Structures are given as C-alpha cells and as structure tokens.
Length: 239
Image 1 (cartoon, rainbow, N blue to C red):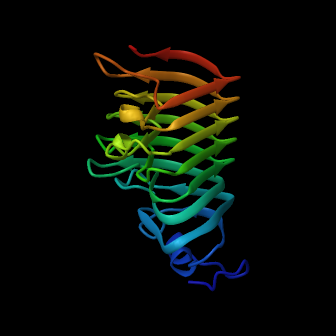
Image 2: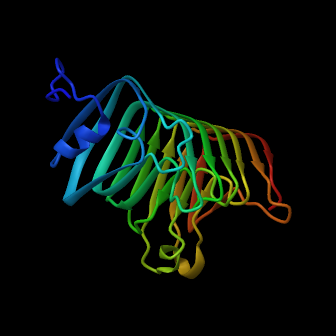
C-alpha cells in the first residue's frame, strides 16, 4: 500500500486520511475511484489544516449515492483537482462535500462536473457548521442537477435559525454552467431570524441557470449578497 512518499505513494485517499493526523499536505496523482476513495469521512480530534493538491488527479464517484467527503474539524484546501459524477441519496448531506465542523473550506483551481442530488439534503456543498468560511476561486462547476433546493451550496436548515450564524461564502473568478435546481438554484441559505450566509461573488460567470419548481425558484437566498463584475446569461426562474 506504499509508505506515503512520492516514490512509493499510498494507493488510496482513505489510507492518506488515516495517516494524516495533523497539519500537512496530501498530493494526489491519477484517477481515484471506489470505496477507498469515495464516501470518506476526514475527522480530527482538534482543528487541523490540510491541503489536498492534485497533479493531474481526477476523483470519480461513479454516481455512488453518498457524499464524496465529510469533513469534521479539518480545514481543507482542495487545489487543482477534478471531481466527477457525484450523486446524493435521500439521506445524504451534500453530494460533493459535507462540512460538519471547520473554520474554512477552500476550493482553488478545481473542476466539478456531473453533480446530482436526488432528493438529498441539499446542494453539492453542504455547510452543516454554522460559522464556516467557504472560498471558491478560479474553479468551474458544470452540469449540476438538484431535485431539491440548493443546487450548488446550502447551509444547515437548523442553523439558519440561529441569530448568531456566521457562515461566509466568497466566490471569485469562477464559472457555473448548466445548473438546474428545484428552488434556491445557486445558494440556499435562509435569512430567517437574521441568520443565513453572507455571500460575496466577484468576476464570475453564470450560464444556463434553470429553476424547475412550478411555483417559485430563487437564484440566491442569503443573509446578504454582494456581486460585482459578474456575467449572468440564460437564467430562467420564477422569483
């Protein structure tokens, strides 16, 4: 199974997670599939910082109905990675990433394609934690389909009722195309009771954003929204 060195790497992401117990870097090379690479929980007893960096790496969920990654007390930066073919079941929180507890989640120079939520617990990226900062930079999302609310990003429905919720979402220089959702097409973060996420989006392009709800759909539901230098084309929703 290797020793984790560049000359003799581990064969799976699961093995790397089991060994990495403190701050550090995991470098991925090649194509990763199967139960040793998908549906994993990365958990720590105390908050740590980990970079997961791709070198021509592809993580293919093969439409397995589970979150690709569940993160608990780990601040992860996903860098230069391609994620394909994720799907969610009715009990799944986030078909791509479910953040249970973290200070931050960073997605940098990464690509996500063919993402499906089949009546799951909302969105490709799910922020269950109430004070996480999500940062998406120079990344691309294409073909995201949700049969529930929250096409790309959602925050926890219980935590949305917390007046002290502090979720922050920052998106810069990214593209989002062919997004279909039942409602809350891009961000689902209720502003009830003054909660929800503060969302800032800059230098980003949205193309083909479609709402499938018969009575209403929204583009972004949040506590606050600031957008600048963005392009939106072919958007079809009701409110």
